[in-house]
Amino acid sequence: MKKYLLVSACAAVLLIAAALIYISPGNKTAVTASEDTSKPKVITTIFPQYDFARAVGGDKIELTMLLKPGMESHSYAPTPQDIVNIQNCDLFIYIGGENDIWADKILDSIDKEHRPQVLKLISCVSPVEEELAEGMQAEEHDHGKEEEHTHGAEDKDRHGHDHDNEVEYDEHIWTSPRNAEKMTAAIMDKLILIDPQNRSAYEGNAKAYIAELDRLDKDFRQAVSNVRRHRLIFGDRFPFRYLTDEYGLKYSAAFPGCAAESEASAATIAYLINKVKDEKIPVVFHIEMSNEKTADAICRETGARKMLLHACHNISREEFESGATYVKLMRKNLENIKEALN
Image (cartoon, rainbow, N blue to C red; front, top):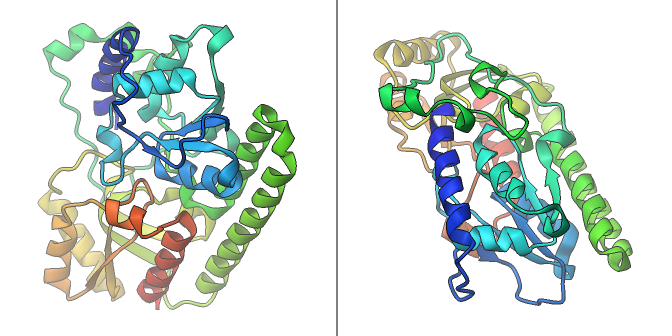
């Protein structure tokens, strides 16, 4: 994941400068749920927190998601209009991990008097370190001479920390429904802070949504309590650490976290093929917006079925227009996991 950081940081600096003179209100680059300027303006970066905020805020907020449906979340870079919108919103919600350094730079560029309320969701949960599990192919980093000369201020966050020497946390905190409950409660608190007159609506919506998440969590626990096996196989990147930790599942995967899209080595594929054969695992998973090549190779050699486990990073335009939600996607994941474990 770190391979994205330098490019994102440099791009953010340039875009912040461009945004200072960019004043074209007709240039819409994000997904906006409403256009009522009298409502609190809430901006989220990616789909999970967009959906949580939509559930809590309902029709009381003007909600925008910066990442357009169908866009790969790890290649996102803010446009000048995105930066202007962040500067002018009432509440900005983001994950706040390594992949969001660009957001910290934008927020730091706004003077305190005009800075929006900010909710950094990774601070609402207990994050875990990214893990390189047995058989998993390490992320490749191609730091050439040109990059070496650019190390320094750009590799440090706003507190002056050197990211190359820090622990890298897994940012996919929303894949645990329990974490989703905590983030929903935090969003409710922030909405009440910026819009206290609608407190009862936010509290009621949050209570109902957290109850829905609680039912989802209980269904996951019941589903994994009496299964034949406890290992999931991913012929892909693996953004489900919080999900597997929450429900006591094991996993084997080609790449950690959301490493850059690349070809798995022959050794990695052979390891996963042997795992499938040795444990008679019926399903090999891939994630959304993947090329699925590694999963296809494993399935060809083992006869296993290929299935999607949706990480909810983002959704397609078709999914968005058909009303996809975090809970709907996770319930489909639950059905697929039950098939893989039985």
